[in-house]
Length: 437
Image 1 (tube, rainbow, N blue to C red):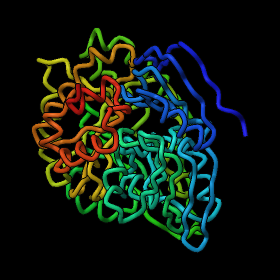
Image 2: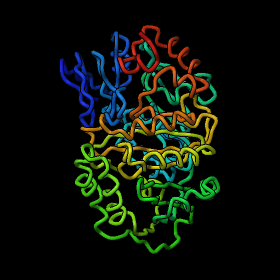
Image 3: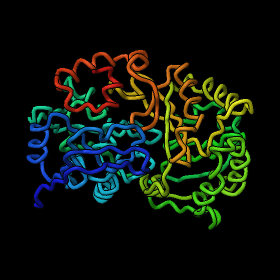
Image 4: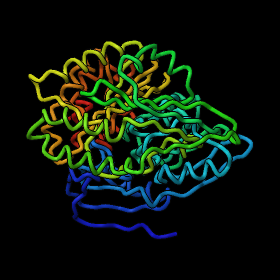
């Protein structure tokens, strides 16, 4: 076992270099005892993994803990189909291990480069299933006093802990309940907005996997559907033209000056549609093989909002009307990722008590994201309809708005204060979010 390491007085920088903070002490931990020791002795402490959040939750205090070396497989149980891992493990490594056992976690996020702890804390999700946190059956969590608490399915604390933004404690080890591995037959291709939006609820129920990459200013979406099939089913695969792999490079070029000339986004989007989203594709594979991007490729800045499935058609039409007005600067880079999450009982879940649609908003120019008007526009419209922001992405809403959006917001704040009375796990951003001094 490698010993704990410590770095003094440095600068913490997020993955896209949009957020920087100085720190006094940065620890790299390898076991639970080290984690307990640092948390117990610290007045203020935050912890991070891949640093891929667009929200300012990972640093901003004197003591930081790098969780990425706390990444081992602890155990798995064939009879229960469960696996326990340390929270710093990358999602890629978790899924590879799960699939090697013939299992799966039925709802996976778009990228696999995030740590398990960070993914859970921020409510990471995929589409056509539940939040990743819903598949957790047990947490070991290091509390503010350095003690370890085991929280299992059915415990009162469980539904508060599943999505907690890292303010109730530090995840130590995590046990996932898995399901048998299955194979998907994926079909992809463009559809007009009126087509993919028609009977949307029925489509979500019909397919094992359903996702839409909406293409603002084009009137179209790129639709991906997946049906479960026997693993030995033959599928004639079509991965599309070879030049499709250059989409990110082309996007970066076409969007380079759209912060100065927002209207050019509409032209760029139509060019990108014809070049990269107008062809059809077909493939098969496990959920992980077939649907996870496995990298983020280039730096970008993200916002994501969610709203009840029943309300989404209204939200979509209002958003589409607003961003197509040439009287404002809310031109949106493509694609806007539309995904579907089943309702759950986790207090700070976007899908708490409601089937949910999530809609991502991306700026391909991370360095000019503060001037990207689309972030403000999408937030205003989604808030109007009771929309909830993704905890790991950009949003401006704070405590007052959250108390209206989340029925369990005040109850969560009460538990947070009981577990962390000295606000050890709050940085300035989180203090503002929870209205704590």
